[in-house]
Image (cartoon, rainbow, N blue to C red):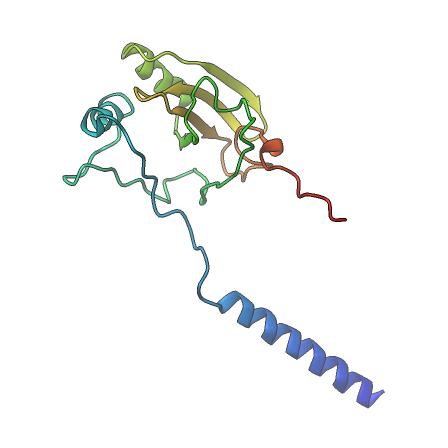
Amino acid sequence: MGNLTRVASALLTAALISSSLARAQTGRITGLGGVFMKSPNPRALAAWYQEVLGMKLEPWGGALLRFDPANLPPHAVWNAFSTKTGYFAPSTREFMLNFTVDDLDAFLARLRAKGVEILKREDQDPNGRFAWILDPDGTKIELWEPRPHEHPKSSPGRVPESIDPPAKKG
C-alpha cells in the first residue's frame, strides 16, 4: 500500500502543478479592450452617443466604460452569430452592441424624450430586462439591465443558437 500511496500522491501533485501552470500561462485573451466602429460621420455619431445615451466622451473623442460598476456583471460577452440570424434586424450591420444599464425604465424614458424609437422590450428574460434601439448609423443596440447579483444563465438576449454547430466529421 505504501508504494501505491506514493504513486497516487505523486500523480496528484503533478496534476495540481500542471493545472497551476496552465492557469499561469501567458499569451491569452484576458478581456474586452474596446469596441471600434466605422461611421460616415464619426463626430456626429459620437455626439449622438454622448447626447442621447449619456456616454461621457473623452478629449480624444471616445468613451471609457468601467468594468466594475456596482451590481453589474464583472464580464463582457463575445458571441459569433450565423450570417443568417435575424437577431440584429432591422440593422444590416455585421455587429450589435450590448450596453448594461442600471435602470431600464429610466433609461428608456430618457431615450423616448429624445425621440429614440424603442424597437422591442423584453422584461421576462431570466438574465434580466432588455430593450433594443438603433443608432443613427443603423447599428442595433441592446440595452440590458441584469438581474441583481446574477451571472447570465446563457448569453444575454437568449441567443444560444447564435453559434453554428460544428461540422460533422466523416
